[in-house]
Amino acid sequence: MTEAKATLPQSIPSDAGDARAMETTVSVIGLPAIGMSELGAAATKALYEADVVLGSWRQLNLLTDDISGDRRPWPSPMIPALPDIFAELHGKKVAVLASGDPMFHGIGSTLRRKFPNMRMTVYSHVSSASLACARLGWAVDKTPVYSLVTQVVESLVLPIESGRPFLILGRDEKTPAEVCQLLVDMHQGDARVEVLSDLGSVDEAHCIGYAFHPPAVVSALNVIAVVPSKSGNPRTPGLPDSMFENDGQLTKSHIRALTVSALAPSEGEILWDIGGGAGSVAIECLRATNTTRAVCFEVDEIRRGRILKNARTLGVAHRLAVQGEAPHNYTSVPDNPDVVFIGGGITAPGVFTGAWDRLKPGGRLVANAVTIESEQMLWKLKKRHGGLLTRFDIAKEHSVGGFSTFKPALPVTQWVVTKADSDYLEEFNE
Image 1 (tube, rainbow, N blue to C red):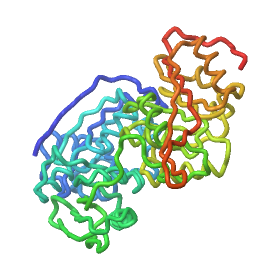
Image 2: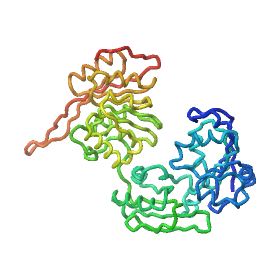
Image 3: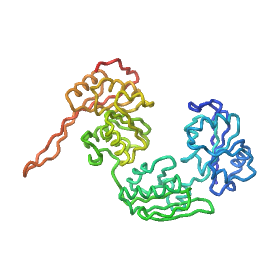
């Protein structure tokens, strides 16, 4: 067993709700499935000295009777309650139980994210993913791992489409069936699925099956190994238009690829897609990255529902939110964008100015125009803010009788601009 310790100085977190929470000494202890017998001396000492022990009922029941600290199960939902929990524990020694490695999709990572400066010592144990790879003969450093503890099953669409074997940390005993159903829905019924349960305990089990004939599930504590039978859609932008349910309001494939390239989404960024239509630009940006988030602004209620449906089908609904008409709903979104795309409505009062005001310094804005009026607006904005204007003319092969010709689409003018740190927008009468 390996114990890793990392202690950070005492400070006050920005969202703790009570500064006293940071005066608490917190030990986050990775507990093996077999219980306390495999814990190291330092982790065991922290447990014995704790005034309060927090964990799931399963974890708390693994403790020996001589642990005297007050045992408290997590409430549900847990994360919203954390500030109040640690404010109440002011000045106490607290042990937080985790399964395996607390910093691998675990409570340790959650606490560090929620309280960046928490005074916390972490005692790691072998993760369930490492144990699963050992049983499967897979290389840990080559195996992607995803968690469905808090995510929806549709978040696995992109991993499945990659065609690479991967692991899933299950939420409960229903998770393997949900994964198998998703695979069948994606026409991968012959994908191999293995369920590894209660890893490291005396009840450990390993069941093998296929998506169309799921393996047995013997425990809520499981890791699922998936070997896709084939690769799916590419993550590079420019998916066929037919991949998006739409009513004609759609940025077509070639222009969409050029637009996503201009937006250049990066990991962790927030994108605003104004005039969402079918949501194709935002969805392709999300598919190109793993952690980008997007907000689509769309006035039409039916289209808003269609955007969410397309996002679910293409595996990014968990990172996309939909709002109503711009600019009236800008204030409903607390986070300022790193990237803005305006695909419609550029001539409407406040659409550009409101988005530009919210765009972070150094952020990028891309606007596409088809009509003369919207093109004229882009010329005016370009003179004020700089940037680059480009016109795209796309023509596709078209049959005329027994001959072929090229049928042009409407030309698209695109404006790409970066907001300088010192660029403060004055009121501009659109």
